[in-house]
Length: 64
Image 1 (cartoon, rainbow, N blue to C red):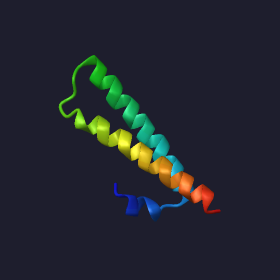
Image 2: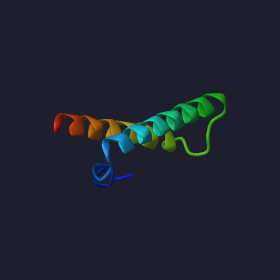
Image 3: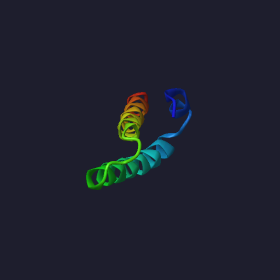
Image 4: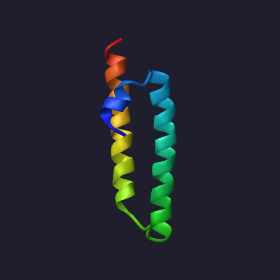
């Protein structure tokens, strides 16, 4: 998801998306620790998406 798409979401939508993505990231890490997943780059993409969402949430909180 691009940061321009994130900017169009409301604060509540961002928070729900953050929870879902954190859950997905945890599942990916757990699955990879048990047996290597097919594409480990998904872990990095997921971690970066969590960071982008957190950054956008913080920017919206500061602009209030």
